[in-house]
Image (tube, rainbow, N blue to C red; front, side, top):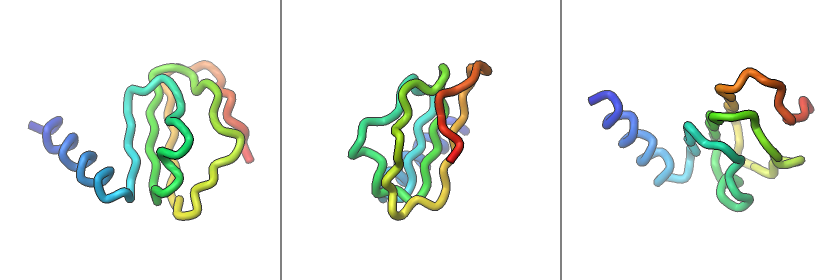
Length: 78
């Protein structure tokens, strides 16, 4: 039951274009899919490959990135 509630909550949040929540992904979302969100949560199954050099998200207030793989990432810390 918990999974159903979580899926519905994610669907509503994404439908309102406020939050982008993607878990179990292998690559960064395509440009043009994330710029308008105020919060983004991405959980990768592997090391983050080819993240964007710049995030142009004028409304972004929260960014959560998590990798299940413990190897170093290519994300710049700036």
